Image (cartoon, rainbow, N blue to C red; front, side, top):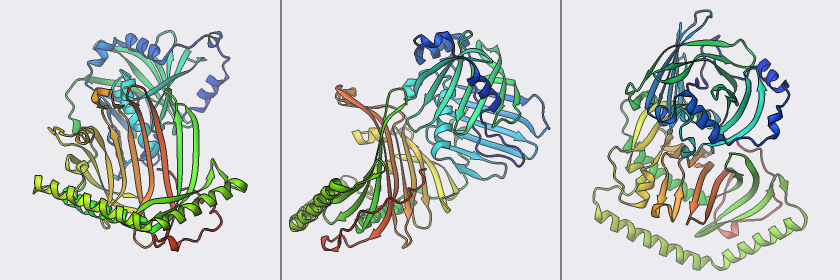
Length: 535
């Protein structure tokens, strides 16, 4: 499978972001449903298995470790001369599109996705752009082989008529929200089209011919937003040439950077953030989604609370609204009463809480001292996460109107975990954005590249693709505070159950308070402010 990636950077006068061709979508939607639609649709696994058999067999396809495709335009104004797309199993992709005035280059790995435009500006992708690029790379680098092991969800949406004949539409999705529709011919079993809504795009595949026992399309029709199709022809394909893994890394733009020293400072500053966090009240918006095994959101719950930090104990939370409806009447009165009782209890237990907090601090100090004796050279201020990772392609970029240093991370080569925590860390990959002036993490993305099990999977099992994203924001007074946190994972516990966790937390409306109980005056519930744009 050789789907050109969605492009996120463009030369002047040329737009390559792939969008759905309007007349084609209308033609498909206007066709009457087939009689077969009333029958039970085959499973997505069956459709993919038939596709793999049609192009050469799963064993033959699985032997492809890397592949390079070179495409040339059928016709045009001569501005585009070559499109090269490279894949490396299990989930890496790189594309280079050459124009008369330069190149557009983009790539995606399980760690990160990035693009560099004609102007030479490098951008690490976030949000839907990143999720789409990673999902497409995972699907196409593996030619759809064992997509379920990569925690990619799939569902058969329909069997329809189309200009290509009868087609099954299979939607592949990631738990990060990326979605692509692959259209498989019901007769030939081959992929005839790939579509996406955000950004809207359509790619059609024609002229399948064999290349080294693999059936490959030799013509692609790429269209966006109803504009003229761009048609490209396959000039050359090369399998298993031994592509280097670092080919897919972002270009390094910071040559002299002591990442370890920078992270020591970041770690110390993060400790200060956690201390100052207890000095502010704020609004917290919590969104929980239930997602079924096919990637469909079954239920979404949104709660907005006002949070009051209390010294030496858990903060007090006052529910303001649920699913967009502000609390009122008896429910609001009960919530006010509950919160007042929490404050009174905190006042009564103030001395007891202070004693418990002192005991916890003393225990942490003893643990820290014992650890230092085990390894005098180990800097305990740096988390295990940073100690056991290597940092790839440090680069400078602008993010949220601030200059940042960005780098990917992955486990150090040859690292052998000795604890359960280190075993989990060894499977994490991701990317981090750091403010070089304030030495603060602006954004962190981490993803489980491999499955993680405890007790051989009998106690706990996490599937690949489990991911978290966090962001911090700089307040006017120069203090950094959490802004956004999202976690997506699929977990099984003790063989008896488990499920998917899809949760987002957003913090806003920070107000400085002394975390003393006497400082709080509870008034009318606050109204929810317009939520910050999700990354």
